[in-house]
Image (cartoon, rainbow, N blue to C red):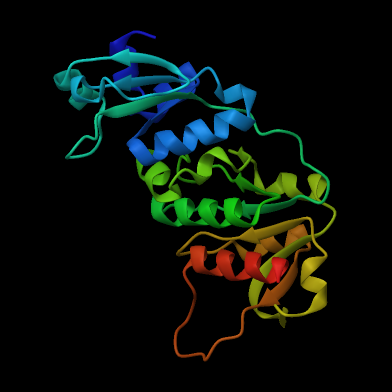
Length: 239
């Protein structure tokens, strides 16, 4: 890929056109290298390093570029001098016992990155995103995921209406649902979480026939942050 095309990957439309995205920084690249050791689809990644990182050791094809060019590839104020070119992989088929976390129009990159970290920590979970959600290959999501994005199957642009055909049993959160600690909470294929501000429209939720569950609280505030809600739910599934 030409250097000018690499710079275009900061924009979603070009990531989708070329089928690649960039990750930046030592920690993310090290996590990528760990993931590639287990996933052959990642072994074709390329690493670009600045002049002062010329000695960086990597199993990937390495290209040394000037520090000025490295600044052009960076989206941070203080570039670390290392960027990797990563293919956008299609999610692998569901594994036995795998559960899906479906996020409806989630908007905040930090929330999505945090959710991916949780899914990667517990394992055997996939992230399914509705149309209108934040791009998981956005640099802010990548940084917030701290490398978890390489370990979680991700599907994008999956319509809410498609869930009924795909999953036999769907659970969601609601103030009037069964307690989260109920044994029944563990018996679902898909767990649905709504947009940070609007949730999921009531009429569309009703059409899914999703079973409601409640995270009990003091009632002092109206709602939980969506990433916090996912964290609590996934922990409960693994408790």
